[in-house]
Length: 92
Image (spheres, rainbow, N blue to C red):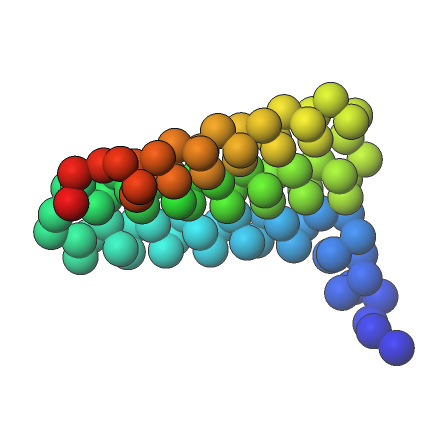
């Protein structure tokens, strides 16, 4: 049996906010050590798609309207598509 605080932490969507915070911290740390700016743009797209999915998860767990969940998913799709296009057809 899981503790009540953990069930609440996951159930109300705070776990998604924690994951978003970790992604933001990771992005800052990587950006500080990344020398090539071309890769920084790709990093932003990659993290934006993950952030969109986490936004959708938070919206779903916190009881948001289905339209808000859909908006987060569309944002994740657009970021993912842009990421894939730059990986496939961008300059190397």
